Image (cartoon, rainbow, N blue to C red; front, side, top):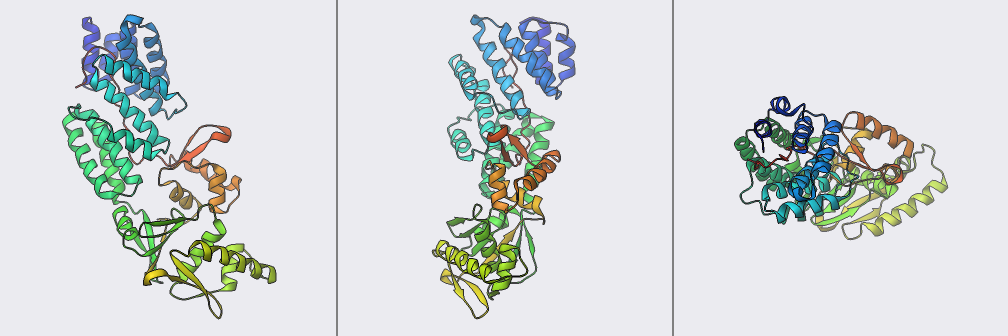
Length: 407
């Protein structure tokens, strides 16, 4: 490694991307291209960074497999930052194996963390959690420790486990302070702020609504009450979960019954909400009986639906209370965000079905939310899926493609 490459690498370690470029801006040899690509990525110029890293990887010969693998991993992280998730994970896996075979443990762990964050961005929480659990994080550099703990916090938050999320964020903050990377500290602060924001509103037996943070939502779901969750569109009682997202009429009926509890609700009111008509006739009443019958059979393990003189009443099993959780704000966009909040990937048609709206209406709302960076899309055409943005922004801490160790 010559003196200019070494100086550029040291500047990147210190977070001085401009200083690094001053040393290698006019050079086109593979090590200089790799460092230029890393510097451009740190400056947010991702397309240019990707081009430079690809040129660098192609410039290293077969006897320089370690440097080539580092460039591939750095390019994968640029793709992650660009939210370009269309590449094959096999290329990253091969580079990871090459790094491990040559005892570059820090960069190999960085590559595995990139794979974990890719799974999180794709909404595959179970796979991400399993990959995180298999990581040996002992002896990681502070910056990688912070990234690993942020990923663990993301999994816990999406799974509505706030205590493990808080503990992971405390560890991430301590590691980010040791790393002295301002972007990492800002990312941890943003993730911790998400725990303090209202996550839902609670409606209970006609009382005034109450804003709830994630920890309060978690406590409520674990309280044993029968919870009509209008955020995730289902019924929960203890560990039992009955999804209704793909049964919009049954969901509307269940919501109306839960909101009226412990009183009953008139048949015409149910017809108006479920079938969107103000002039019910016998066909609507017949259809209501059919849908109530379907809902009664579906919720039987959790509650009964009994007929009253004027309509129907919800009677939970075991003398539970009935609680309604609704999104923190009103409107169709709030319902979309609530459905996406668990990190799962949804197609436009599935969202339209869950919201009982046209696909065109849902598409317009998604375009507006995407412009505001509140949702994101992966894939194209029929394979396109929509997800919520990560609770943490996933700061890009790029690898050093040179021979200097990550510190």
